[in-house]
Length: 557
Image 1: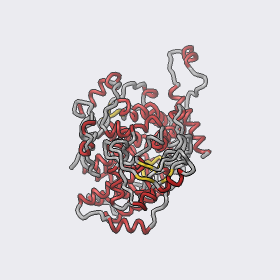
Image 2: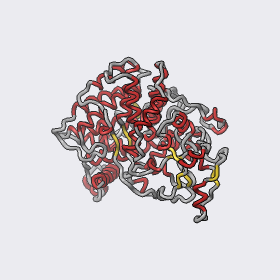
Image 3: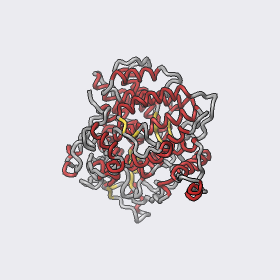
Image 4: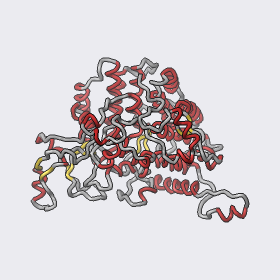
C-alpha cells in the first residue's frame, strides 16, 4: 500500500507538470510564464502510474460505464442513472463523451509523453507502448475512428488538431506495436518502478502484450478473418508466452479510500472509482440493481456465482459511507421461496412495484429498532453484492479466464491453437472465471462440488453456433467488472442475444431509437475545434455521428 501511495504522489506530479506547461518566445516571457512550483519535466514512471490508475480511478470517467455500458449489456438496471441513460437510450453528449474527454487529456497525453522520454529505457518504453495500445483500444472500441497516430502530440509536436485514423489502421498498428514492444523487453535492462499492475515484472508484461494480441485478433475476426487468424497464431508462438494462470492476470492495484463523493474523489485516482460509483452517492435509495437478463441467466442455469454477485439487502439502516449496516435477506428469501423480481431492461426499480414480503428477520429486529419496517417491496430486487463495492477492488485489464475463452473460440474456428479441445478450454475458462470472484473480490470460493454440478447441468452445446454462444455468454459474465471489454465483445460476437427494452414494454421511453446502440457519439466540440478531421471520420462512418452506426470491426458473418 505504501508503494501505491508513492506512485500516486508521482502521478499527481505528472498531471501537474503537463497541465502547467507553457511556452514563450524569449527568456523574459519564459521567466514570467513559468510556474516555479511545477517541474519542467517528470519521470516517465510517474506518467505510467497516472495512466494506469486513471483507467478505473477517474470518478468522472467511469460514470459512462454505469450510465450506458452496464445498461447496453443488460447487467445492471433500475437505478436512476443506468435506466435513465442507457436503459432509455437517452442521447446525452456530456455523458457519452466522458471516456474521450478524460483519457485523451490525461492518460493518453501522459503515456505518449512518457514514450517520448524513455531513451535508454527499453523496458519502460515497451510497457508504455503496450499500455498506450490498451488505452486506445478502449477509445476506438467505444467511438470508432479516432485520433491515434497524432493523439497526445500537442505538447511534443504542437499538433493541436489530431487527425482521426481509421479503426482498421489503428488495429493493424496495435499488432505491430504489441509485437515490437514484447520483443523490446529485456528483464536484464532498466527497472520499471511506476507500474501498479505487475510491479515492474517484465515477464508478465510480455504475456500481457501477447494476450492482448489474441483479444484484438478475435475482435476483427468477422470483418478481417485472414488477418485475425494470422495475428492470433503469431501471438501464440511469440516469445514470452501468454497469460495462463491467475498469477499472470493484469489487474490494477488500488487502495482503500473514502466513499465520500466530495470534490477530491474526482482528482484522486488511488481508489477504484467504478466500485465507489456502484456503491452510489445515495446507496440506501439508489443502489446498483442487477438486470433481469443477467440475474435470470445466472439463476436459471444454477450458476454458483448467482448469490455471490447478487444479494438481497434491506438498506433502511445504511449510511452513505459504507455497507456495514446493510441487512442481508438473501438466505431467508431462498429458504422461504420468496419471488425474486429483478428489473427488466428499461425499468426503474420503482416501476411496477414488486409484491414484496414480510421478513421474519426484520420483524425480530424491529422489536428493538423502531427505524426498521418488516414489510418489504423493493428489497426483492437483487442488488450488487458488497464485495464489489470496495475502493481497493482491482481494475481488470485482462485475465487468464478471458484468454481461455479466446482460445476456445479460436479452436472452434479451426485456427491453429494446440492448447486443448474447445470443450476443455471452455470449462477451464469457466472455472477460472468463478475463481476470479474469490481470488480478487473476496467472495466465498466456488467448491468443486458446486462447479461439477453446474458443469453436469449445463453443456456447451453441440453445434458450432451453440458453442460460440456459450463461450461468449460466459465471457459476458466474466467481464462484469470490465465494462469496456464486455460491451466490445457483446457487439463483436452477438452473444448473449439481447432484446431491446422495447420488447419489455418500455418503448415509449426510448428517445434515441429502439435498437440497442452500438457505439457512442463524439464530443460535440470536436465538430467545431477539429472540424476537418471530424468530418473526414464521419464520411468514413456513414456521414452522420449516429450511435446506431457500427464500428469497423462490428460486422456479423
